[in-house]
Image 1 (cartoon, rainbow, N blue to C red):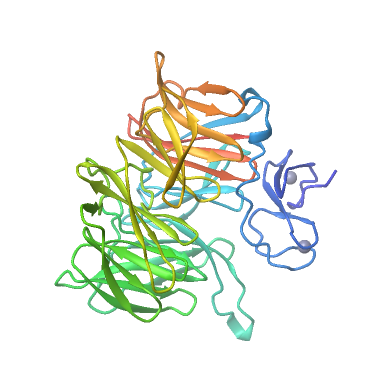
Image 2: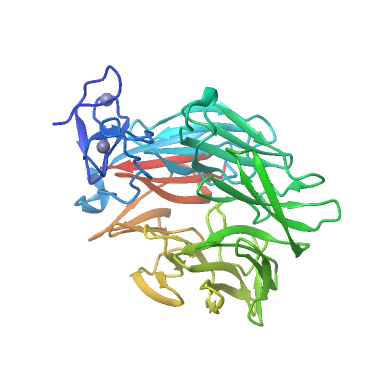
Length: 434
Ligand SMILES: [Zn+2]
Ligand SMILES: [Zn+2]
């Protein structure tokens, strides 16, 4: 039995495939891929062999191996504010940004959250990203990578080092403002390899793509030639932003534009009548390998444009849906779509029904991973959350409240988490763990 590696604890570890938690302090732990040693959830490097630990295992759900959901431990927590940005799992915790600008951390094993940093009013309306950045070391020391929480408002890109508690701010390029209100518009951020991508606009409303290097405190921009745009999203080695009728692709040197197939109209904001719905605050694009799916409509019905980015050629398929639908990504990042009575998983442009259930609602984002499906159903008892493993199991969520909208599901090691807004305007988290 391994012993807890958090200071002064000494509890036993409950271990699953790659991640787990301490049964005494209930903090998350994870295994090193090089030496199999156990480490704290947020550790960037192994404490035994110094190898980088990489991203925290998201898919060792372990819940998929439970015989029934009655054996999962459940926690329900109400947050006394709304959340506009979709929360993110990192290091065995769920991180969220409140509408009032508080960065908080929820532990699915403890079933409680704590405030980590105050970004302040005016922050909390754009995407929350978490990525490793290595700011230049002081006094000639080498840079040490650490996880940063990153968000945006019109006048700054804001990053907060979770271990060093260092805040870094980076203003937009001269004469520009960041497009940072992701509550209404599909405008947010994406990141890879320490670079953060977002959109900015000048005084005449012309939109540019911005690449920010937070560690070097440097940013560059490229004019997209669009006056209305959503994005950006990183797909393979490309960065995409899109207007209603065309999309722009940046390949690292040049921006070029390509029209959507005739009849397809891309959605630039949430709440379009005919557009497929996704989780509240979620960035709309789904990326799976070299495929990206952008929501929109075709002939008054929901549709996706499926662009495959291969060097030089970018074939586009229009995926036309028959009825209202809600979508998310499964644990292998494939597009999954909940339509009335079924859950479809997409391989490129081809759907495959993985769960047929006549009560499945088409207006809430679903979950699929580790052999487990979850979706909201309409039953005689009102709205319920239904899990499908080897059999179906229903639960109410949250107890005694009505759900207004859902941010969707995410996983953190052996935990599954659902975040939502209830009809009294407060966000809430329900989590389960093995
Ligand atoms: Zn412990
Ligand atoms: Zn190690």
